[in-house]
Image (cartoon, rainbow, N blue to C red; front, side, top):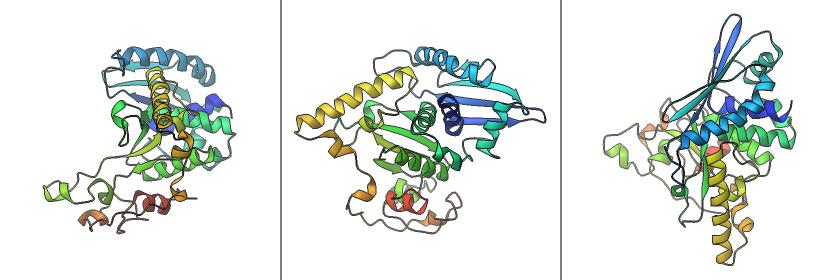
Length: 295
């Protein structure tokens, strides 16, 4: 294992698809760019292309072949194909098991035994393909910026990533679970005739300054993180507060009470994993604990 391999595995876990053939396998990784311009009104696609040049320099010697690159307005894709009997592909397939995409992949137990730096690289690869940070991501105060990691449909991967973040001492500020009690806690959308409104992606939210040790390799995300982490620190210091004392807290270290939510008719929906299906939740923390992200 090395940092380059860890980064690649993080990218695959975050937004990869695996097409297995009898003799060779193709791996495709999507890098979404929801906005066409950066915070400085530059073309995101240009930044991504520049970032891919750097990523190629790192990954192509590792995989032993060139990376294909295609780009559309809202996403870019890198891909490569290798024979199944080649060492690098055998190792990748060993780590991802029988998964065919990010929607059913889990983080292999061995990843939790990686070195600290290798875990950081894994998380950066994951963040480059799932994460974003925008000015609109603030929490109540306009300088309280956050990184969002979006995970569609894969409940267990959310917990895995949060546990890996805990291993490198990075707390999660909150998880916006795709659960009816979280996304439609007051039944507003249900009563509007939109019973499936809550079936969205999961969002892991992390304070910008706490995310700096991981960072991004994708340039426009890296620049935004640097800027917004500085704004967060400056804003808290202007209030006479120590930023780390405010942001460096795991959810089990607090005593906050949860507002009681009404029962939702979709609590038994098959979209919800069996371990928590049929249960009622007043807080994201309760779901996190039941799915394995806990002290």
